[in-house]
Image 1: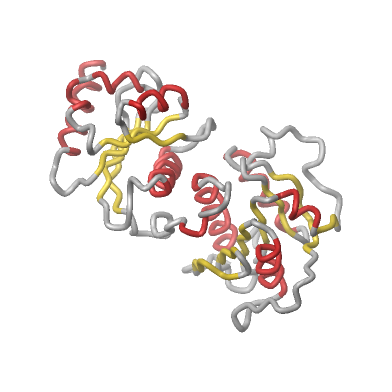
Image 2: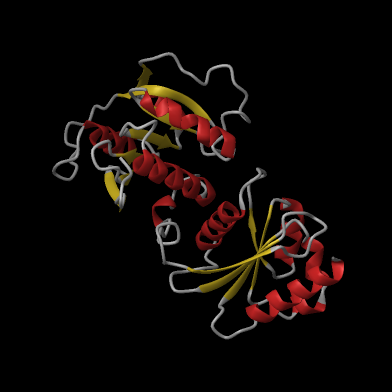
Length: 290
């Protein structure tokens, strides 16, 4: 098995050397692999993604391109999306880059999965994350939340079309400008249990999208509350014609705070992102199930 794994790794690196591959995104806990001569030769093309912050910092000082991953268990597809979002934000990747993603899930593995992606193709890579500037919201969290919002808009919940609103960041000011209209369903749970980086929690949270009001999400992914009524003192907020009160509330709260709001439309399933009182991104739900 070790011989096969080494051969597979060698073949993956060989693919990465091809001219039409701009970067190799290596998602791994096996950071000792950088000592291999075959890896060092690809240093200019290589982007390392891992949860091991201290080791990544040391490798960054040695000239390697590195991005941090949150310490949760993700599927391989999620790992790739989150790592690519981080690399885009770090300035390593941009639209048009061809990326060979190689993944090893365990610290003693070389590689078990190879995926080829093109930045800018598909909803997930087409988000530039420019709207995250001047915020403390990590691209990894925004990638997860956009994916969750798209799923809600596409699938609804138990046969019902639903709309909802997430407000991320600057939570102290957001809470000060909102009030609880139902009992907070997340009161008393640990931060680990109500963290959106946790895939199990993301499945559970969809049940609470039936509640009126907004979700308030901290920059580290912890959901502080659901069922918040957003209060605004700005009567001059304007949203595109045809968008309702949920979108107006999103525009208003992001104008008055340094937050970002994600709205899922109940009528169309479209996902819209607001910052500074303006809509920055719209993702239409294609072939909606309901």
